[in-house]
Length: 434
Image 1 (tube, helix red, strand yellow):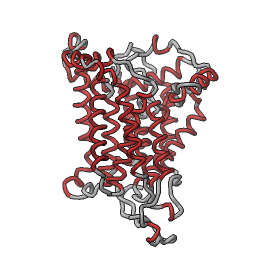
Image 2 (tube, rainbow, N blue to C red; image 1 turned 180 degrees about the vertical axis):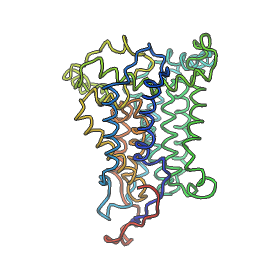
Image 3 (cartoon, rainbow, N blue to C red; image 1 turned 90 degrees about the vertical axis):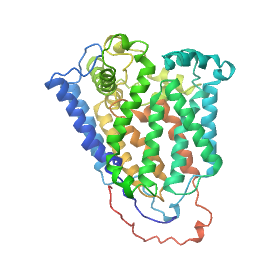
Image 4 (cartoon, helix red, strand yellow; image 1 turned 180 degrees about the horizontal axis):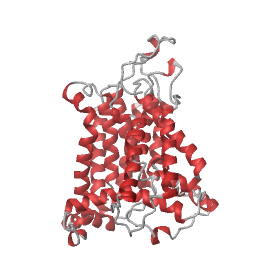
């Protein structure tokens, strides 16, 4: 209800504070213990090990800064003015974002309409994803509008589950269409991250705000969702890897499919940390080129991107070719920020990120705070922290832009002005994480 200050309880795995201190930090130290003290081979990438010594300690300092930010008792996204409570993005804007995303997908895969034999040929091949990527050229411009699909799902889920308002039939149909397009993208383009992001968004809103989330069997299972999600994620990852690389190459060299899948999953996270640690070991830093923290700006078309690249003199380095692995080339969000900015600025940025993430979580728990729509992107930043800096990635730029537009255009529902709002009313606390 507009004007309500009710705070909805959330399961433990929603909190950036809990994730940082109880998941990321123990995992970071555990990977170091496994690779350095126990001597386990966690990576298959060229055999270089950098995740130790000063590099490990620098990364630990950055991770502690992120955790410290989540502990600060500041709510940056709080709404102080009662007249700003209960605002919601207009339905027309949600349609606009969704249709732009559909246009992006249509433009991206437009070659399939004029030459459907591409799809038929790819379906006949065991390497479906590889064949599709080799046959279709992605547009760096209009095709990028497809990334607005994630913002669309945030806005739809916010309306359906946070505000608990019915979705018009055409909006539901648009959501189904975009979900199908995302599934096709995940397998045809081997971009499973796109489907993973949508699943995270729907899980946050569904388990956080739906009427059934806190009741009955579903309510009892909420704390166990991460375990179920990990099992489902491994299965989904295995299916994707089968079509992406196992059938075409690795089946001839590996003896066990699931051992292969486990090794590759470890590679995606440990090797990202190892690659990032190597960057601050082998290369001079800070680079001040912001190739990780402002990747979207480097890729920006027309004038802005080329001008920025010229100013920072971004040059390709020998590092990945000599020490890294082209398939696992993420420098992690942790070491990527350190390499770009240096230790002190990186610690400041990471502390602010932790503060924003925890503040967005608090806003997300307040159904009448429209700024809670920013929580999913900051949540993705935290859970992807070991792989890459999500906020600086080019896929996040339009996501953030669409959410900013939604917050700026948010208006009170019809008839809200007639309802009384008590400026001095205290928030009704209902337990859960803060």
